[in-house]
Length: 263
Image 1 (cartoon, rainbow, N blue to C red):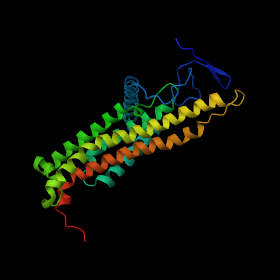
Image 2 (image 1 turned 60 degrees about the horizontal axis):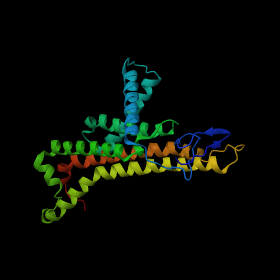
Image 3 (image 1 turned 120 degrees about the vertical axis):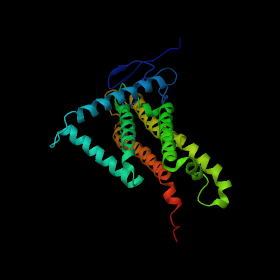
Image 4 (image 1 turned 45 degrees about the horizontal axis):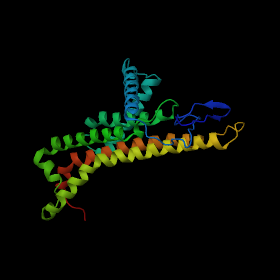
């Protein structure tokens, strides 16, 4: 069994072989700490289930006794619904109403999964590619369903041929590959940003624990934790905005193809 060395942070002994992404403690094993390790899919799955339970509970509490003069929780819920509905209306256009439940769920689900990584004993489920890929595939299949429902099967297939029949044979494979790549680009973008932020926190926490004397408890990662609040919100917003864009392109394809070309 390899020798493991305990370290101290702010005068507190740390157990070897473990670390917390958002806590102000890290651990060191000999010879090198395992910094920036991707959380296991099982752990991320359980954390994501916990997020679902929390969101469902908050939704039930916010809508259980609706009042003309809303309380705090109902007021927050109404503001969230109005903001997400406005974003969907501006990006998707006519018919956006039927997509608001998906848009709202995607945004809140990703945002909360990002944020729980700041709690010491939790990991951000979105820092694992399995979770983000599942989200990307969910959006992908929903977009394809809307495309077939809005345009019919033949109109859906013509969508990949482009607006110019003369180059359809060239455009079809390009558009098809581009469409198939969308869930993977969504997944990798979200995973890369969240995992990168979590890794930076771990590295800075490790440096704080190893380089600074125990009488100088200055957490190097604290400014990054504050910045992460913005980054996590932006990443959830980007994923949701791209979902809206894909829905707009697919659901309004027939309208766009029949419009007069711009001069």
